[in-house]
Amino acid sequence: MSDLFDENGKVDRSEVGRRVKSGLAVVLALAVLVGGGWFAASKGYAKYLDWRQTDDYIGAGQNDIQVTIPAGASISEMGNVLVKADVVRSTKAFKNAAAKEPKSTSIQPGTYKLKTHLPASTAVSMLIDPTHNKVVKRVVVREGLRITAAVPILAKGTGLTEDQFNAVLKDPSKLGLPAYAANNPEGFLFPDSYEIADAPDAATMLKAMVAEYSSVAGTLSLESRAAALGLTPLQVVTVASLIEAEVNRAEDRPKVARAIYNRLQGKTENGQVMRLQLDSTVIYANNLDGKLTTTDEQRALKSPYNTYVVDGLPPGPINSPGKASLEAALNPADGDMIYWVVVNPETGETKFASTLADHQANVKEFQAWCAANKGKC
Image (cartoon, rainbow, N blue to C red; front, side, top):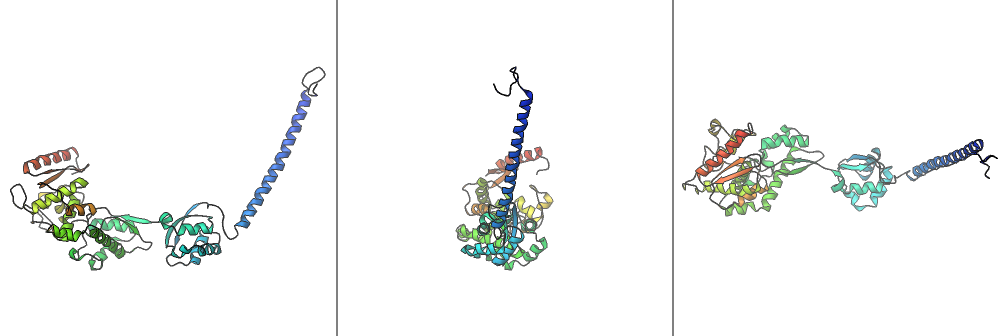
């Protein structure tokens, strides 16, 4: 019989308690030994890591960090910057890693997304891959903005002042404008997304926008295609700016181009040339903003840009059109449409007509929308 039972066959409680206490003592002793060993091992491993990382970190890095590499910095200077930010352990390690990577000589200045405690070789690899690791600041200038509306956006995006941009625009002869722009940058600051340099300046920014216009115009063969239409390049850009201001749906742009050309060429309901009478030109002439309709007084303003009081096209663009509107001006739709009206400004739905009666019916639809959407017209 087990000695856990007494002579009467009952459990000996005192013996059970003694054995439990003994077992706990053993467990506690093991825990102390294991824990102490683990503690000692951990301390030893930490010292091992410190020894291994005397000159260079190992591992995949720790915390996300952004570091700016200044323009003109040497490899040693870059290493110093990275050491100060705790990205690499030593300048020596960074220099050694850079020496093994031929592309390190082309590391670009700028701000990079890195990590603290990176092996120097990893830091070099990240710096020579600006596509994925460089922090690029951009400013977006959308289609259809006049210069006075684009300047505040450029100023905010670059951190420069509006006065700095306006000072450059007072003498646009240095911006690289095409000859047919007649030294007027309106319409030629191409709408797009632009990278902002670490030390931006207004002249460089504006030159880049004009250069982008020239690139797009070249891609479209704008000058030769304008001649094929019997138009000057400036007239095409002007028509494109009208299209940009009048509609925003892709399918409507070529139709507006055709309607404009029909009016200019006298292909109208009564076979006579008619004025364009576009509210968008009135809005530009009166320097208005955020308007869809105009008043009799505004439409009576004597301005070469007011197509209610002058024949033909305005003397130049009223905004900067995008590529789609330039293409539409060069490739108008077929048809006899001479009227159009946006019947739903929220969706951009536009209806076209070749007779005044049909147009007036469309206008009533627009007026009904305005009546149901107070303050939006």
